[in-house]
Image (cartoon, rainbow over all chains, first blue to last red):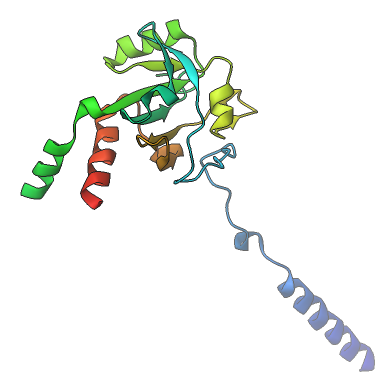
Length: 84
Length: 106
């Protein structure tokens, strides 16, 4: 009888331990948009880093040349990895 | 609707320079521009210095991630969008719209 009671306690204890374990469904599913994209450390309100780059029109552009003249939109894109 | 139309009129393309930027070579960018009928210049950040300066360099892939920065006449960043929210460079119109909305909200 005591043996039965002990084994019942054991089973209950084992069951409660099992219940306390986090189930796999509770962990957030990894985002489908794979590799971890690096995020810019630049913020709105900060000065934009200057650059000098060659362009498709044969000219070389310097960001600081646009100061007090034009707003500039920089659209960074991934060409070789998106298939156009 | 009238106000919206007025804002579009306020936007002056001569007031804004749009650039596409990638780590591809100038000839590769020329081909891309040709294929997509892009009229604005595409900058070639072949040395990956600019993508690093702007913090969007993907070390693993060796390329810059998709991102859009709008910089005002004082050289100050006014708008940042990254990843899928960033502008598709094949649609410069979107960039113009951002500036239009910025002006409207000021």
